[in-house]
Length: 455
View 1 (cartoon, rainbow, N blue to C red):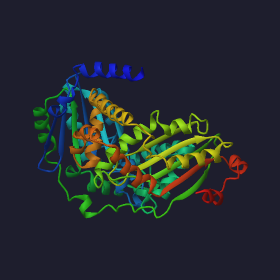
View 2: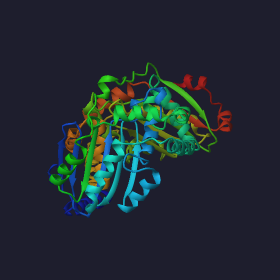
View 3: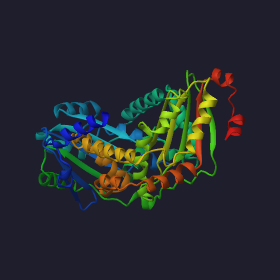
View 4: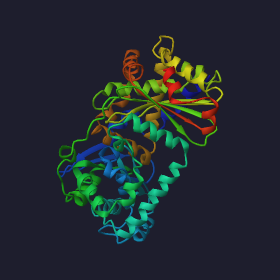
């Protein structure tokens, strides 16, 4: 019955005249300025709004330990004084004049800045973006104020016990270059950062030949290209930052490791992490990973056996697509009383992931159909869609991966899934982190010696 309802919903959705599947490439237009700036226009006249976004190949993966977290701090300084706007107050006043809603994010391999405005403000919006991205001032008083905003964000994360588990597992998983997988950064580095470090980041990464400008909404690409040429053509091209400073590749884990993280929690959480595929090195595996993790999170044997049995209260299976290896992650929550039995059951299940009856061919096709539907649904809203396109441009170095994503998802076979699971999970070393309170740890006799004895 559920499947019939889903099919009906999808039929209604894709018969509506917003953006049909066949229109995707017709509505995306790409142009590159002589300075290397990629310009991507997504035409969608559904509502009279325009979203303007800059995506930059920056983020944690560019950060050596002395710069750990400064991509994130730089993101915050974007909304401050620049060559056209004298201070943050004037910046915010200009956003109100333009009726602008804005946001920015920093992740492992991407920093993006975007805002949405009325379509009549397109030219003013491009002018605004040009000044913000090319002429930041990094005023001392604004930098001092903003570093504490970032530290407050850090403190909020630290108040969540799962944050500590994730950080400690990541330090083991990416043991050699941890700072390059740590977007939130180091408290000490953030507190001591100065304007010189901000300018170093700007001059190295915030350059046209390392960026994409995306414009989505009620626009015509011809006009956008003309305006971008007018406003951005004098943005100075610089040497490729990744030729000058090659990003080190994360080495494989030599052996599996286990850690215990003590926090004041009421449950026990097990986090299992593996190093997953790189999108540029093993592209095919990333599609198999998406299909497989979707199956595992639905009504497959994996959650049925582990959750429906009462051993775990929740369990999730994920993979994050990245160029410098994405993590494969299982997060499972249980009680202290059931911990040992639950842990044994989890590891027992990992042995059977590739059994023929563990998931059906129908489940594979269902996963592929739903991944397609989920992707197409993002096409409906330009302000969301542009962020998805920008993400894939940054992570994969262009649009080819994204534009062919659905077709390649459809090609995934059981054999592709088997290769992914065997290589990266069953034959891969992992890091297991256990989040537990001090009281529960003592009650169940949890220590590294007896954990390793069971593995």
